Image (tube, rainbow, N blue to C red; front, side, top):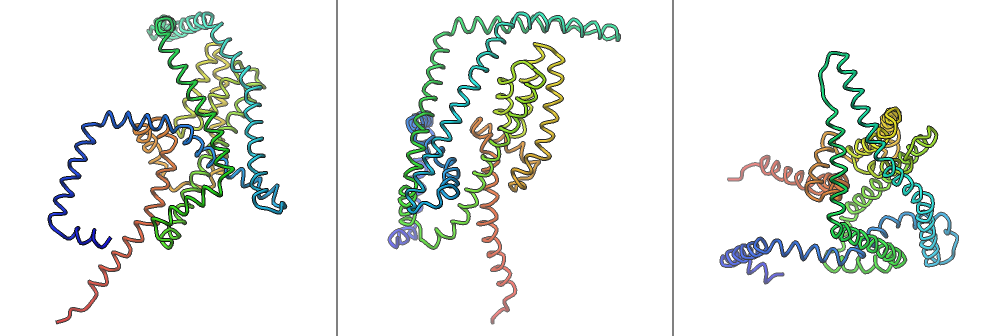
Length: 388
């Protein structure tokens, strides 16, 4: 370290360092596509491991809960940990089995019904457009929307032709989906392996950390890491629970009022509700689209319910779950979602708000104290008497 500081003080070192940096920067820019392909290939290869790490991280609080609350009376710590991991595994398997048994057949039935009745839906849609034109004509308004029906039919015809002419691409996409499902399955297996070996992995990471960072500095940063950890867990846990509540409420409403496509629409509403701000609008639009093809009055009832459940969700459910804000002004939420989507797509939309909250914490915990110390030093220098 002392030798490096000695070299750093010499004039030629700065020029050499700047030249090497410029060459490296030019090499990176000139080979950017190849570098991006290499990163993509590496991420694809490591996808099961990354999914496993994320799975273990998200399931760790569940395992800790079982370990402390249900198996706290066990004598050895390793036995408590093993029992907690096994019970977590059983719980996840039961949830997946229930989803497959209860949800998949209903989804298949809803989709097959939608495809089977598509022609009758187009006929009803054409009739609806005609009624709207007649009502507008009675009111003295001249509009022509009957062409929309032909546009819908033409779009559907093009979709059928696309499926026929791009069978290979569709099969490749299906293969990619299969690969993704395989990666998720392997990731779940890796996740439970990481969860079982949590203590060993944590001790190795801490040793590596203390090898490069002073123990004193590491302990000071533990508060920041703990805050970031709490933000991620609370945000994603509360978001998933909120989506589950809204999805179940939608399913119960549609089953009570005997609306068609209940499982399909409830699943779409639950999944889109995970997306901040714009997600509920997307889910409501999909639900109205499916229902208006069957009966317009059903779409109206669903729209009223969707507005009501989102109002209850925004005023009661989310404040109770999140227990306050993450320190992000409401005005910036939409801006952050748009920027996150531009940078990293759907993943960026989901991670924009927690990452922004972490940036706010880093600003308050690191930058603000340094600025305050700097201001104090400047004020002391200004107040110090001049010595002649």
